[in-house]
Amino acid sequence: MQKKLALYILVLLIALIIIAISALFIGVYNFNEPVIVHLKSLFSFEEIVKSSDTYVLYDLRLPRIVLAILVGSGLSVTGTCLQGIFKNPLASPDLIGITSGSILFAAITIVIGAYIRPFIPEVLHYFMLSIMAFIGAIITITFVYRISTKNGNTNISILLLSGVAITALCGAGTGLLTYLSTEEELRNLTFWTLGSLAGANWYNISILSVVIVISFIFLIPKGKTLNALMLGEKNAAHLGIDIEKSKKQIIILSALLVGTIVSFSGTIGFVGLIIPYILRLVFKSNYNFILPLSALLGAILVIVADTISRTAVAPSEIPIGILTAFMGAPVFISILLRYKKNLG
Amino acid sequence: MIVAKNINYGHKSHKILDQVDFAGEEGKLIAILGPNGAGKTSLLNYLANEVEMKKNFTFFKDKLYKDWKSKDLAQHKSKFSQHQQSDIPLTVKDIVLMGRYPYFNQIPEETDWDAIDFWMKKLEVNHLREREYVHLSGGEKQRVHLARVFVQLENTIDKKLVFLDEPLNNLDIAHQFKILQTVKEFTTKGNTAITILHDLNLAAQFSDEVVLMSNGKIVLHDQPTEVFKEEIIKEVYQFPCKIVDNPITKHPYIIFG
Image 1 (cartoon, rainbow over the protein chains, first blue to last red):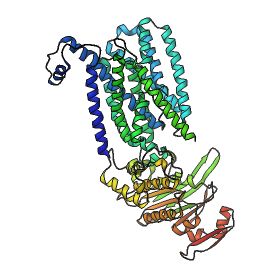
Image 2: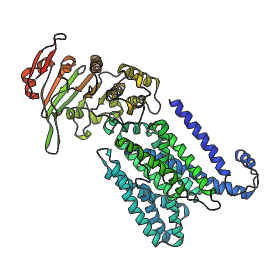
Image 3: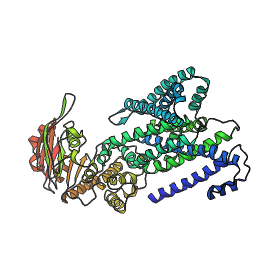
Image 4: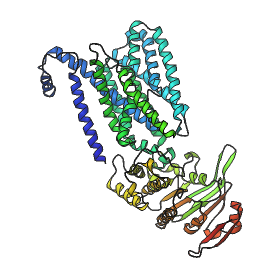
């Protein structure tokens, strides 16, 4: 069985690499050299390529694809982990309000930060933004958890409704800031509400990589814990699992991931809902399988969505958040329909 | 093996356990009996370390629970709870495998699979291995969790302890007997089982000691022959009964009504 897991990981990894490389060469720009030459140079490190080609490949598309991989895997692992601790397939960072909390805090940083921005170096901008978004995420997730969980049991209606309430509140806050902001800030703010990977650069990629590596070291091996939680917290404790510690780790790291991701790419909604849903169709809720696989499948989904977003109506772009929402909403509805079936 | 003194446990002003003392020795099958609301489950939960660690002064193998490493503890004792989740979206095998979580990190080893095979066959759930748990009947689910609880104690450690809260719910007569025989076999190897039962005759037949509870107190903790006396049982259950000798096993046999 574990051999099968290794096989699935390998298959998805190969798929991810193929899709990432293909996405690198899909777009409006016409290359001077044929694709095969670039591919050769990619693997032989020879610099034979004309400069405008390399610019498009390595300064525009590559960062964007790397960011897509990081964002996709981060969001879907977060969704999977949250579903594990809330014991419900609907818990995902956007539906329970965490994303909107981070956006509000990021918006505050942008509008207020405009005054101090000229005085600090660019790397710190990204740091500030992600730290503030993280703070917004941690506040909302703690609030939502406190309000919807009693003695380890989560009431899913309260969870989702408090998500709605938080989203409304944070949306109002963000709206107010939009109203107060200057035109350039405004463009930044709409970018967040619809999501985009166009802001990819090596600064935010390096910050996000560090966050992802640290979080995944703790989160990916949590399969056993999340499986055991399905027995109920007390029974899980009898299996020698430190529930409180694991929950704290998951909540803090999820907030860190969502905060950082949102501050760099805005709301790319539903990724944390779609990916675990697809994997559950095949692997039931066995988190030993769906945790590592969600990291890979999430990356694939976001690369594909981003490639569509920048090519479908070229030279303009469809915001990627719109695409993922088109995929996510039907998933949301089909999960609801399953509840209806259980009503009898 | 397990000692707890002066247990007080309550919910708001209502006392659920009132100055209870309990001690259990190794190699015994101890049955906890009593009418509804007597505090049986609360006592079992307390002894099994489900009550806040800091307030729990149970000594298990001469050590307070808080001084144990949680993984070690999970290899020495396990618990079967009365209410099991009925909607776990996993295959049966994945649920039984959870019993081995204290033993492996990411990848189960050969010994883990052997333990699972052994107990799934023993509790007659091996044919359900690949089935989805949610589609099983109540009795089958019950046996799956019992398998998980025993799989957890499949190791070379001496003197293990299993807690069972009404393990016979939903089971047919044959399986009720088979489970108790399995528990008995477990205790004859020097392990201890503390189990809540409702069937007094099964308790009389299988247990080494009986703990009779009423209103948050232990009325009697003794051998079955000492506990199963007409006046005691009548008083505790507030219901008329006759006690005779079981013609086959010679254990006390209780007839209510």
